[in-house]
Every structure is written in C-alpha cells, then in structure tokens.
Image (cartoon, rainbow, N blue to C red; front, side, top):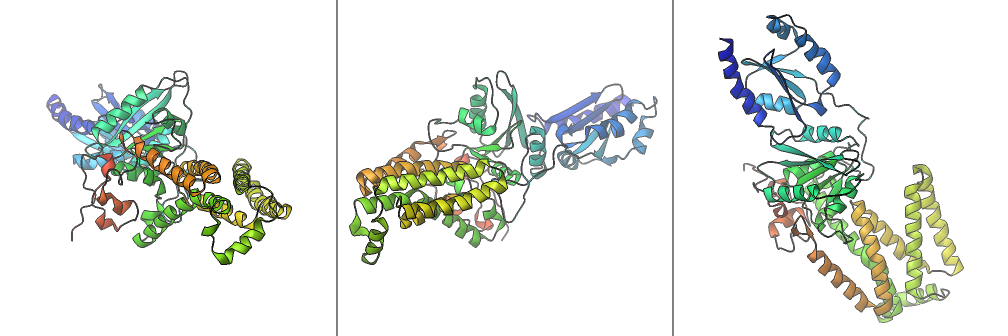
Amino acid sequence: MEQQEQRQDRPQLSHIAQQFDDCADFKRLTFARLNIDLLFFSHMIDSQKLDREVLSPLLSAPEGKLLDVLGRLSFERKRENKQIVEDILSGSIALFHQSDVYIVDLYSPKGRQISQSETETTITGPHEAFSEPAWETLALIRRRVRSSHLKCLRFRVGEITKTDVYLLYVADIANADNVAELKRRIQAIEIDAVHDTNMLVQLIDDRPVSLFPQFFTTERPDAIASKLVAGRIVGIMDGSPYAFSAPTSFFEFFTSSDDYYQRWSLGTATRILRFVSFVITILFTCFYVSVTTFHYEMIPQNMLLTLSESRSRVPFPPVFESLFMEAVIEFLREAGARLPTKIGQTIGIVGGIVIGQAAVQAGFTSNILIIVVASSAIASFVMPSYIMSASLRLIRFGLIILAGIWGNLGITIGIAYLIIHLSYLTSLNTSYMTPIAPHKPTDWLDVFVRAPFKLLKKRPSQAKPANPVHVRMKK
C-alpha cells in the first residue's frame, strides 16, 4: 500500500519540480529513508529555521512516527499544484511525503538592510535598491515576478575570481535566439577578473569602442521586473548592486520608473522634457560658439549690444572660453562626486558661484557663457541614466570644437556623424534606434510619450517576444 501511494506521489512531485527547470537558484532535497522531498529557493528562506523547525524534527523522528511529527509542525497541507508553485515562489518550502504535500513559510532573506537607490531616485513608487549579494538580488526579483516561468541560468566568469553571473528571462515571452546569443557571449569571456556588472557589459557589447551604452543597467528591482515582463533578458552578477537588461535601445535611457507611477499626462510631459534637455545638453554651448565666432547675423539686434559688451573684456576666442568653462564644470562635478556627501554638495554650490563670478570679473569668460554652460549642465542632470548622461557630456566637447572650426557647418557635420553612428549601433543584434529605424509606430506610445496603460497592449518589438500581447483589458 505504501509503495502504491509513493508511485502516485511521483507524478505530482515531478510535475511541480519540472516547473522550475533551468532555475539555478532552485533547490531539491531528497531523504530516501523518510520518503520525503523538499522543494524551495535557498536564497529566500532562513537556513537556520529550516534546520531547527523542519530538518531536525523530521530526521530525529522515531520510526513510524513521522506523520505524528508532521501533524505537530506548523505545516499546512495543500493539494492544488498551482497553489503549491505560488507558495514556493513566495518563499515557502514544499514538503512531499507519499501522497501529501505540506507547506511551511520560511521566507526570510538575509543580508544588509535594503537601501534606497542613490543614482535612480523616484518621487513615487518603490524606493528599494539591489545590494551586492546575488542571492539577495534574486530574492527581490522573484518576490516581484512570482512565476515558475522565470528561469535563472548560472555561469562562472573570470579565470581567477570565478564570479557567479545569472541570466534571468521569462520563458514563453523572451526570444529564444536572444537568450542563446547572450549565453554564447558570456561563455566566450576569457578574462582574469570581472568585478562589476558595468564591467561585464563592456565585455559583451556589440560595439565595445562606442561611447554609448548598449546594455541598460539599473539598481532598481521594479525596473528589472518590468524588463522581464517586457520580454527582455536580465543579467546580475554576484558582488554588484547593478543588473543589466538586453536588448536595449537609445530611447530606453530616457525613461524612468516614475513615468509609470504618475498619471500618463505627467509621465508624457516629463519624458518630452528629457528629450528637450538632451538637445540643450549637446547643442546649447556649441551653438553659442558658432554664433559668436561666425554667425553674428543670427543674434537678435536687441541682444547684440549686450553680447558685445559681455565679450569685450574676454581675450580668448569663444571656443577656448567655452572649453575652459565646460572643463571647470566637469572638475566641480567630479570633485562633488568623490568627496563625502555633505562636503561634495558644498563644493559644488560654492565652487560654482565663486569660480563663475571670479572668471567674469577677471575677464576669462563672459557672463552670458556662464548662463549657457550652467543651462547645459543642468539639462544633463535631467537624464535618468548617469552612463548616458556622461556619454552626452563627452560628445558636447567634440561639437564645441567643430563649432569653433566650421561654425554651423561643423555642428551639422557632428550631428550627421552622431546620427549615422547611432544607426550603425546594435544591441544583441537588434537596431539601437528602434522604433525609428526600423520604423515601428506602435512602439512610439511608450517611447516619445507615455500613453495610458490600456493603449500599451503590446510588448516592445525590439525584444522580439514570443508572446507580444502585454495588456488584455476588457472594455
């Protein structure tokens, strides 16, 4: 009779265990003598509670008294497979004994206290951020994506450090070719050490020499959860608080989690403001150089006298003047980032005011250029992605030099080269300029604007999802 019940138990156990195939963080413990199997995620439970409240009582139970022990423990008997899978994903342990399944809640991920994101702050919505241990990052992700379709593949990178890297994707949504390509690139890495996710993505970029990031990196669990649901592939690395997602597009760096936590009209206005700030960041200073060097006819007549008086005491050409002030802004930015928080804020504010005022009085620069450079610097802070913001600031220096040599023609040449370069880039063999090239009008509803959720029915086409339908709202 006992053997017959055991045979009936195996299909249910096999079916539930099969739901977690390709999940490197999934654990299965088998105790053949007791005819017991335990299914759980090790990073989501308290190992001490597991030993004290589950394993010790079961292993020390007298022969023939196992059912009595199970009856005394804080186990809840479950029968539906779907509910059992959801309990495991929520941090519980599923205990299989003969034809019965017991659930005990031991969810208790350890580690340092979950902190707020320092580089990706939001006004509304969640404020938690990833931390360095990979298992804690996995726990935060699985708590938000409670699906057995969320798969987790494990790799080792670094001949010396042997750092654990995990790839996560949602089966039946993520594109299988993208998963295979990313696996191939990670397995092909041959290097002594990889210390951070931002270092890892540079090893698997499509175009490593480009200034632009080709993988989206973030330290926010809610952002990563949205990428997984959108059909993208996510990678995390042990020892790094950042995760990456792929494939990504240029326009993805202009989005923020805040866009989806506010009303769609506010999210749209904020997103448009970021594109305006992008134009100001790369063009405002170089346009000043071009106009004051070659194209005085473009200056309004009422402003021409003021500009002439402002530059009358400056002995340098506008291009050198602009490069000097832009370099000073970068010095202040870097100093403020490296110093302790309170001192860094003081240096940034006081240093900017003192140096700007002193530079004008000494005749090193004009007061109008101070306004132009400050506006460009403030506009660069609007970008949600620090890495993309840094790339744009570097491009600004190149455009200033071109404007000082050829004026508006130089700016045109620089912008044309920038567009050609962006069109040439790919991310995981997909176009970096999606949805403009290739032209995908349906994706514009979540790129240049943030449309209401009921209109965002399909996942981004760049990810080539196996299941493109995202929203199924009844009218």
